Image (cartoon, rainbow, N blue to C red; front, top):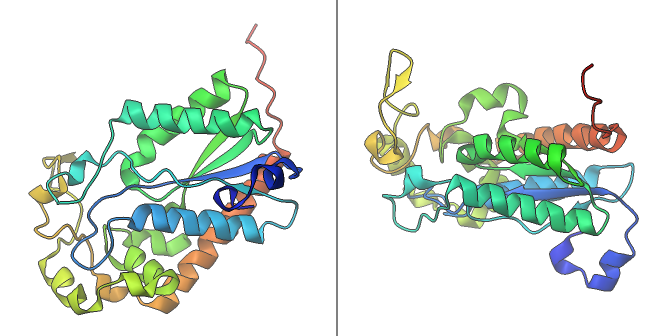
Length: 247
């Protein structure tokens, strides 16, 4: 069930404890892909996983569309919140879901900058709240494709070419590739000298978006969906009783 499309009486009739909460960002994705790329892809994976899950209904919450994105702040249109704000928002939304009985929540993430804060808050929820939360970053769960993840590069471009082709500015893809960076950051002695994307990519792109066609996007969505379904089954079966203190 897509919660945003349902009435409260529809939601009241759902017998499940499983929910997915998409989280992403509103940030630059080069000259060719939309600012909403990360929350669009997260929501698509969350919805596809809920549809494909065969052991019961899954609530699909509306996406959290602004994330931890200060590293893109020099690019117009980027919005960001502090990690504390992001963690508090995720915790409150999961708490809202749990209050209705949907207390096993997979948080489907589409933005790398959210990852650390998301792991922290899901652990806090599980330890301290009346809910069980697990983070899932879709582009980490697509097999060998994951090694090509940049920023507005082949994976995200491919994904949107499959799900939302009208959002890709095809006439700008060549320039996006030519003016982008080959890798994320400026590294010396295993340390990244660049705090912000603008320090190493002129147009915000990392990776070659030309390498991401719609067929690859379909494969990405299939792989992410399969991974999410397996995770939902594990979350549904998980004994969430808190461990006893060590004696």
